[in-house]
Length: 329
Image (tube, rainbow, N blue to C red):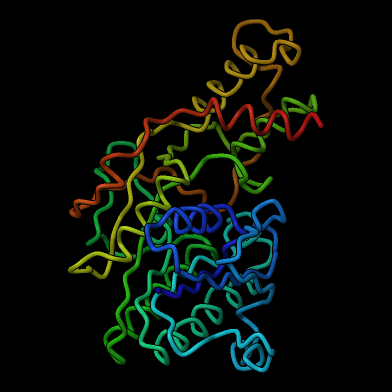
């Protein structure tokens, strides 16, 4: 029997991680899911299964672990084998509006998780982001695992800081931990504030789609299910590395992706088709670019993760249908 602690398991990626864990051949596994049910979490993502024990708490609260251990459920047992740390504040726009919330959650929360890992000598995967590398110009080659950290927003800076905390615990305390840095994720059940849900919601509600700047910013995409599989592959890697980049299967400018979504919504749901002349100007409103908006993210990796090689080709039909049904309800 293996015991897992998953932080942020009611978030977008975390919920996919728990669902993948439950497919494991280890039918006796047990999962402690800790989630404060913040902006990126959803009751829809709460997994009801006898092998999952859900705890709704803020891991950034001082002494949160000690306080919760007083619970008669004996929250953390002596035999924790694996920790997957996903819990974080994760939206750049909100980090600009309230940077201290991101400092508190992403740094203090990670420190509390690291103390848990150190105490129980568990194997850990810390889930980070490609944004810690900063940004690329249009023709620059992809980031590698050796690329320097150069964050440009409060969000990416706090994630880079949490990465460095993990590395410091590896060097100082000898914990067994790896850091994963992934590109943009897509799929059903993502938070409303993210790009793809925002585009689809705007179409369904008859609103303009807000597009920063010219929309030429470039992003790489992976389905959240494939990301979850890669995380679990890293977790049990026989010779684990400190850092793993997780590239996606499709790279698009924001404006191109938005136009793809518009075309697909019109195809599947013609009732939302709007009048237009030429380009889809009736759908789109270009707005002032946000401060420090990274131009391009793209990843490469030296690791041979099967989940990365086997990931599905970029396809958002399922995702579009999910959100249209959600927003028209």
